[in-house]
Image (cartoon, rainbow, N blue to C red; front, side, top):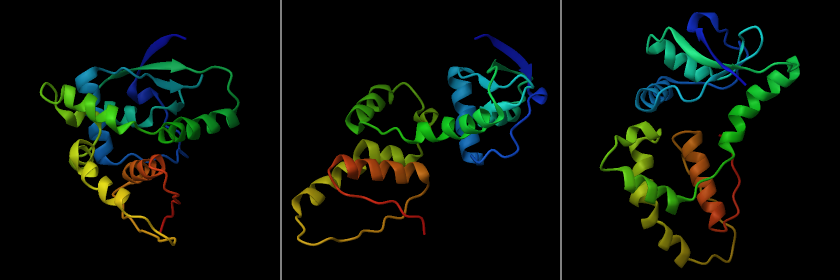
Length: 179
């Protein structure tokens, strides 16, 4: 694979991309590119159609970058491209966190870095550092004879995923429902 730079206006976003990027997330990508550089090339097909990296292109345009690094994925069928566009976004969401290690790593860099470049909002960072630890003993002390449902209003999909994964790791049986 070869990294080739193309002008941002030469790349064509996939018009049916089902993944959304709000202003907050684009700002997070901008912060990441500013701090670490453009470390993750945009994946394109032979016709400069974007397969993965729509958010990175939006951030690059916001930053008035003239060119961005790309990698061309050759030989994919149209259906393979469509599938990869979805899989690239979904597979990352399926990962979980080891919150003890995450907290340790965040604390190790907290004095030297702006934690905003990590992509967590202030509430998420607070929950990682100390918020959820205060809740856990209360949950562990109670034993239930019946099934009870708890409705948790999450801020976004990432928050929902984090809460879900933490509860699953603790052995709770969970279901995700959108209302």
